[in-house]
Length: 497
Image (cartoon, rainbow, N blue to C red):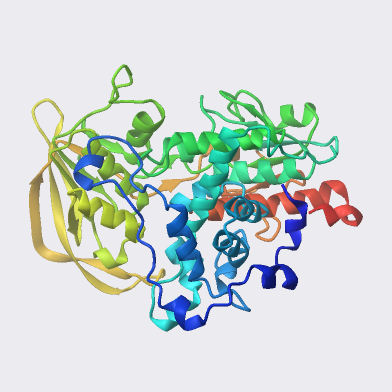
């Protein structure tokens, strides 16, 4: 990586790349439309829906960036990417340099360009919103730069070899290979630490592999990002359950001076209503893991998974959208979202909702299941839905759903996937008796440093937040790396941060 990019916000550099076209000309350019597979074709396979921008599309979209003097988009990014800096490099025809700028602060740009909710983060802060125009497509451009670099590395593996830092001869351990763990591992490896990452499952990637379908995030993209970390010296250990296979004390005895816990939130929640134990009612975690990670439903794979003709997914988040769209690809004749609020309150990305609708998903908003009914074999056959209406806003600012008295209907289904949230993985909190844990089961940390009450143990991602976005988890990993480095390497030497 070009270390001179660390000064990428230098005034001279920016003047050199700044296009001097009038603002009016830039703002008159319409936002790019992402090319995608036709809905009738994509429901037959797991191919990625969004096809990515062409160089010409990326260049034109990059031209829309006004290179604001005080870029609020950067403040909206949890890892602080120099957004105008990388966009201007794309405009100048240097996508590889753009990717280098992104990687100064982001470990997984090809992932984030696909799954991060930019419309709620960086793009929501874009100055175009004040003009009542569509914001610059920051996420699409991030993906373009990252994909261009991954393709270049694949075709010219020796041309852009990483320059490894001087080793510090300090060992640190990472627990979990999701976005928080990978972000921490990359940040620490870049500083010269000997990093070993432990993963409980048989593949590296955590929720990026088991939780997100390939039609939204191909495994090949995740694997390429992981290989980049391996090239930087990160060691990966699979099939190792910290808290069972190895204890906290074992890690310390093996010489790890710092430990970062990023074990996620893999414990599914249910509603506690009658019939949830019937055959054909399962969590989205189980459903997606069987299909995404274990290949259920694919030719030649022997992992079983229930297939339904009429599938209901309970919930309105991204995981619910992933589940219902997966059900279509598994052959469902009817796939429906059941959500107790209106569509406006859905936490899922607008793009994911739109894709689901294009693919034929039915939306039963303002409905809430109150009971499941089974046939004589104990298999779910129907659900009773309570009609809801919106009342006053709750603590999150969303209007609370209120039952409409007497308005209950029965809807036939033969598979129900519950996607109403997850709880933190309890294994590590339960395995370390001296670790401070909240009533919600999350590891308690200093929000500034991500340090727990144990001086050598830091934590981030869903095990701290209880459920969050990929980019927020990555921000936790990066922040923990900065502060662990300061603690291990000494305040007088933290210039390497």
